[in-house]
Amino acid sequence: MSQKEAFLNYINEGYKTKGDFITLGAGMLGEETITNALVNIPLKTLNRHGLIAGATGTGKTKTLQVLAENMSAQGIPVLLMDVKGDLSGLAAASEGHPKIDERHEKIGVPFNAQGFPIEILSISEQDGVRLRATVSEFGPVLLSRILDLTEAQSGIVAIIFKYCDDNHLPLLDLKDFKKMLQFVTAEGKEEISEEYGRISSSSTGAILRKIIELEQQGGELFFGEKSFEVEDLTRVDKDGKGVISVLRLTDIQDKPKLFSTFMLQLLAEVYETFPEQGDSGRPELIIFIDEAHLVFDEASKALLSQIESIVKLIRSKGIGLYFVTQNPKDVPEDILAQLGMKVQHALRAFTAKDRKALKLAAENYPDSEYYNTNEVLTQLGIGEAFVSVLNEKGIPTPLARTMLRAPMSRMDILSKKEIQNVINASKLAKKYNQEVDRESAYELLGKKIEKINKEKTEEDRREEEEKLRKKKTTSAKRSSTRQNPLVKVLTSATFIRAVFGILKKVL
Image (cartoon, rainbow, N blue to C red; front, side, top):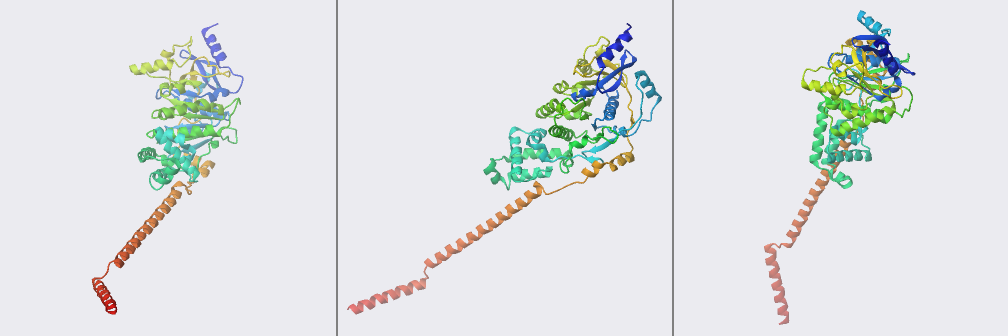
């Protein structure tokens, strides 16, 4: 058996599957693509999460695009974090190119240009379906972890949520929460202290500063109503294609706090909402997190722990998470260990630090008799990658240098007019883009504070009146006990005459 035939068996045996699958590309032996040595990913294991890594310009985004459109074609809904703004082209068919035809001929898979159903979402001022969540939906624990609060400060947040629950005060947006912080340290201090314990004003001041920091990154746009229902991420169109939700985040790179806040809330909401799926053979939703370092760079230990827990548990709900980043080291090791699929594009090794990162990246992949992984990682061309996935039994497949297939959709962005047409046709935009500002804690507390201040003013007035009345009464008493000098003289004279009158009668 020739080396090429042996390699073909190596790939076909390692990547064969009995159920539904996605073909990512064909295996390469050295620089040669081996036709029909197909690298397949079973749909059954897509919820075991994944990683797409590689240096800038090596093809990560196109790999993400290929995976998303093939999942959609299989009826699997997808959510994409579009940080660079280059994924809206999924809605339009590829214009084709001779090099694409040549690539697919080498792979042994026909090229079928087509567009896919998309929704354009936004958590900032960009156009799109508005994604919002209320403060109440976060809950005290998640909100405290996002704000990186101390134990004492977290306790205050828990008291605020409890007080609001007990008194039917909806916490919808950040101004509601800020109003509560004001209330517990001023007008409502005595009431809160009697029922829930004393609250330190220095602690509430520290919490307020964290809230303002979140506001400065655009948090006031994200918190509020109408809350986005995560079930709307799992729609399928009339042709059976999974809808691809493209979340526009091009203005979020300098706002990592808002991005990590959104991501954690979304994952927590998905986990709480979706039922246990069991072994259904296909995922309910796949989420791609582009520029994943934005989630982890400024995350506290508590936040990382929360994300790690969700990553471990959420796959039982049929949800797959795929992190896209430049280097695997951008993803914490405990999370990296949970990722079943790894697609590694080329890495650069210009410095000692780069070479160390390269060595660590190579250690993430199984050994292969066909590759020197450490060496080949620097030689991969654009649209090539090392691939390792889980087979249907959950066992890692052999490492395959892979010539990746080209996207079937446009490898460019939609025009502004095309984007607006997508938004105008969206049913979700009509559902979520009307801002709701119903009566909540801010207004209700405002009324309560006004009432408290009015009652205090009235009480102060009564006390002042009582003081004046007492003062007048005291003055009157003093006046009545003090005799006029003339009265004293007359009284004395009368007394003397009376005495002398009595004496005369006696004599």
